[in-house]
Image (cartoon, rainbow, N blue to C red; front, top):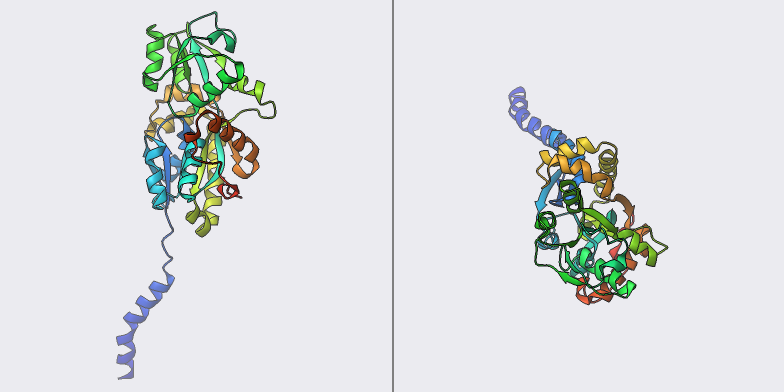
Length: 317
C-alpha cells in the first residue's frame, strides 16, 4: 500500500523538479534601428543574432526617428538609434529616455560641379538644395552661413534620395548632403565634387571639438533601471560590431544588404570610410553634445524643445 502511494506521487514530484530546473526565459531586447547609414555598424550584431540558437535581440526597422518615439514612451522599444536633436526633444517631452553614447559624427558635404567653389564664402547668394528640413543638415548649414556672415537661398523641395540624380542631370547646381548621398552622387558623375567639408568649416569656429555628434544611442529610463547588465552587454557587443565594421567594410556591406537595411552592398563598402562612425559614452561628451544643442537652439528653438536637457539626460556606464 505504501509503495503504491509513493508511485502515485512520483509523477507530481517529477513535474515539480522539472519546473524548478527550468530556467526562466531570457528577456529579448527590443532595438529600434533606422533604415540607412546609421545602422550599418550594427550589421555584424544582426548577423550574429540571426545565427544564434538563443537570439537576444529583436531588431525593428523604422523609416523615421519620429515613428520610434511613441513606442519608446510605451516601453515597447528598449534601445534606439536617432539624431541627437530628436533625442533631446523626446527627453524634453517626457524625460523617459537616456542618451547613452554618440555613435555617429557629422558627415556633411557641399556637392557641386562648379569648380569655382573653393571655400565656404563662394556659396554666397547661391541656391542650395539641403537634405532634410528640420534636421542637422539644415541647422548646421544655417549656423555656418551665420558664422561666415553670408546668406544663401535654401531649397528643400527635392527629396534627399533624389538630390544626387538632380545634380547629375544638372537640374540643380549645389546641394548639402550627408553620407551616403554625397558619395552616391560623386561616384556616379566624376564632374561632381565634395567641394566643401562642413565638418572642417565647423572646426574653424569650434576649435576645441574635432566634430559634432550626428547620431546617438538612447535607452528608455525604465530599461536602464531594471536591466543595467543587459545595457552593458548590448554596448559591449555594439562596440565589437562597430570595430568589425571599420576593419571589414566588405563583410559589413554584405550583412547590411542581407538584413535589408535600405542600402546596397556596393555603396555601403564605399561610404564606411566617410561615415564618421564612433563610439563615445555620452557622459564623456557632455560639452560636445551641449555645444551642438546650443547651436540648434540658436537657429530654431523648436529643434530640441523649450530647453537644454538636464544632467539626467545622460547615462553613466
